[in-house]
Image (cartoon, rainbow, N blue to C red):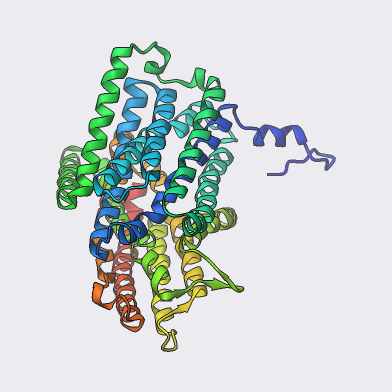
Length: 495
């Protein structure tokens, strides 16, 4: 915001006060960007490597990828507990980077052993989970109540994450094509190492922002216990990915228990709290529909890109992961534009309620799958479509992400009863994001291609076209439910 004196001159001091971030911002920004840079390389390549190196079927690739993504939403809860109650925030940040780096080093080794692969993924999942809440935890403690820098600080932080995502997409595909599978993961490890070195140099900026355990010295014996627990977590994660049926069962059982607990809270809570818990539950249900489609980018869409899309643009053959990275770039571009639209509508008291933005986000991502479906009808008998269809899908996809992905936390803080912020936040991440990631593997199976048809581009195009249309139907069903319930939800959310 530009501020003026009465005489019309710009008040630069006030502007600097709004823009200058706490010292810990640089620590959080750079380490998170480095961590996401590494993490998204494996996210972009996981299905492709399962197909190319381990010869998985489409369906099995989708299931393992779904468990990997879902674990990425379960483990941050453990990381948050460790940061607040056990070892402290900064130790979680450093430990998470080291564990994740270990996973990428293992992936860089020349091996086609599936057990070593899932062990490496286990290190990445546990490391990312321990790390993930630490940067924002420190940033949140650095701002005072009603600090005008909060929005800009977290917006810049989110942009840093997307910069890491987009830059990794520019490296993952071309390097893999030129030097093989191992080198992209070695680069990931280097990115994590850079983040760790940055942490070691600037961790002092978080000294006065620590949780109580972080203020105390940590006995080597306690470190030994923490390391053993991390190794057990790595092994458990690896087994869930190796035996996906067991992993799926674990997610469904835990989600069921959380759901039963929330129903119990509805029964015993005061009247106004009952309404708000019900609203949160319904929005979490709608989030399952959204994210089960959202995660298709890393599963069914990535194989469609690889098989049935002409990835040549301006005479340049563009590797598949580069397209996936356009999501991060689109978020960086569209985010500020959407914020301006929100401000414009709010000033005129026409801003949409959060209960309306949810189904609108689902409808927008549904439009993305309709774009892909129409694209499959435009192959002119070649079995391949222009990459412009996928670019259009990614732009729409990113807009849907901005409407819902960034609203989850806002939903909790605005609607959930104060006594249940933590519980509802956990339910949002575990059920709304984690369970939907697991469910996304089932949705992706709509697009599975039998091995005997892989060489028939016309047949695979038909399979993907039908799958994308079915996914659009799924999205449309969830969006309609959301729009029908929106007035009822808004009334009860306001109380």
